[in-house]
Image 1 (spheres, rainbow, N blue to C red):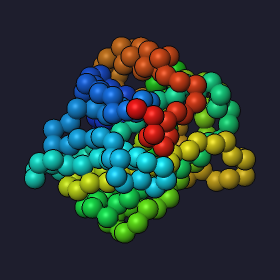
Image 2: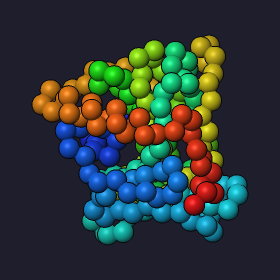
Image 3: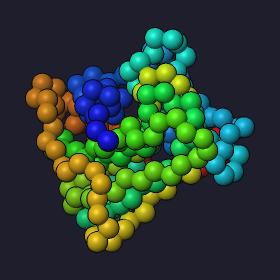
Length: 208
């Protein structure tokens, strides 16, 4: 399926000159303020346990996209290949949904992927992204995203290192594309990661 990345992931996921305000959904997880969308915790719908995170459109003209994220420092994963998995419930996803993964580097380079691969379907489905984390990586972000109208749920994220024989399914490392405000954006990015945990936390959305 075609990768609809640049327009759909910005500005929610892309390192940029200006960023929308973020708010906390639950311990370890944030989303940005975006017109027409909201995120929260659903304690009636879960893959396992007693909670999941939801994203949904709240206005009839919401058509861009929305995402929830968690940031971690890259220290424990440098030089390794990682796999991030998550379970998605997509029966109300009209424009597609996906988990997404980003690896950020000290000079602004990045790896970013998140295909809108899952359309409406009953039940929970597992999705996975595999990427290399370079020796100069400073942080890793991951989460769930949707486009257009509808509502989706995500639960039971996991990150693990895998052997180099496991093939990656993400884009290769790319250079930072904007020159104006680059240094300021990198400073903000480094500050965000410096305040992030060393490993994923609250991946089942059970901790308030």
